[in-house]
Image (tube, rainbow, N blue to C red; front, side, top):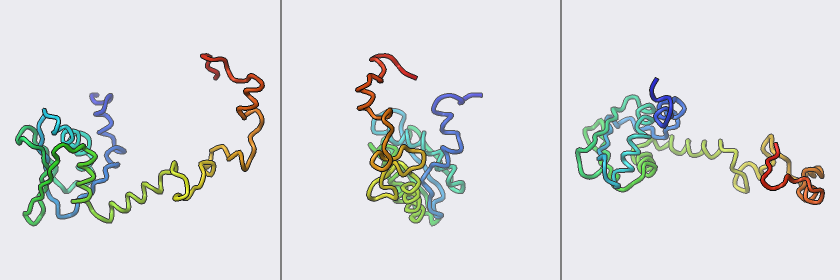
Length: 175
């Protein structure tokens, strides 16, 4: 089966599609992106269409999502609302991350954006310090406790290893 290797396989997985952070408002009915194949100022729009459009289509099944190539000299995104109005977004010389962040601000659901930011911040257990629930890395289960609280055995200290020549010789890998 094709697309089992390479970047295309990643784009077609359910976990990748669920990671999209753009939930469009209910009044957005059609979203189109216009870009050209060549030109450095179109690269962000091209990357956006390649990497982020499948996520937008998955997260917003009621919105028609299209892209047009080689129609206009400058890249832009156009969204039609249910009232008949349209919103034009200039994406000239912007990266796909900048485009996504701008779309979340302009057309995304406001309460979902704040909730996802808080959820991402709380879910990431790698963050620790004064502003986070954990003060030290040793508070995470499975980590080695602080040597200040529970002293290391002598065999685990670098000073003991250096004094007794327990480090492997240079270039030798010890398993």
